[in-house]
Image (tube, rainbow, N blue to C red; front, side, top):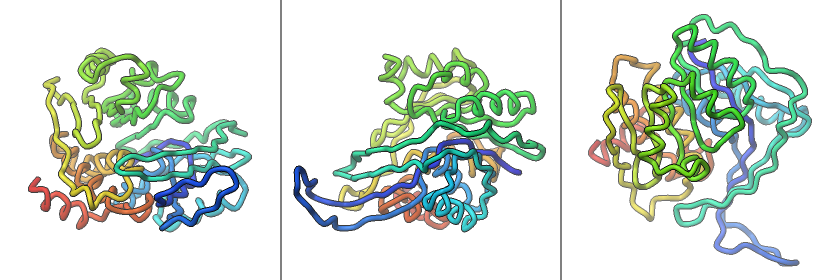
Length: 295
């Protein structure tokens, strides 16, 4: 095991349309994509596509969507450690001019406890806050073992503050700032106070506000992507997380500025494709995106 990701499994159905029907109306979408979804899950698939297959603890139901997900994980060589639920979770996503509307159907009523794995050889742990009991358990174990811990803080969970006490790299969304009534700079101060060595707030097309290993706050501008080329921004943040974990595993000696710039290249590729799977980048794709932007 080189890395472990923990999260909630979704099957994403992403569709492009210029009109949403109401009442008894019907309408045909322009295009659609069906793929794996979920924050840490998508990040794990991104890391695998780039060349390092992490282990994944994720939910799985004994239904046809669950079997589809098992096939997806096998295709990418991801060792899946399933936590059973009764029904698969589903996301319906409609990209719209750089934004996205999402309807989620989620089953987070776990039928068993989380799998307990041997972390021998593991070099990174990535969490998204789902499966909070597993997240806290593994964050503590990883910290004790000197394993890098990473958190995708997309939203406020019941034990977010407690988990953050065991996180090395915390990259959060503006949504978490809003939920906690903090400005992005104040959020960075909060993350420093929780002991996170690296912290950041992603700002979409405005890039990322973050602090480095020395606590220096700086802005990392987003890579420019022509508006006409942006198709689907959903999953871009998840790809960002998976890519910086890959970059760290590939060369831990690099500064985090380099890991994040690599991850920006991965996200820039993702938003130009419909659906999570189609948007997963190869190393060539990332380099091309960075070269095009002059990064």
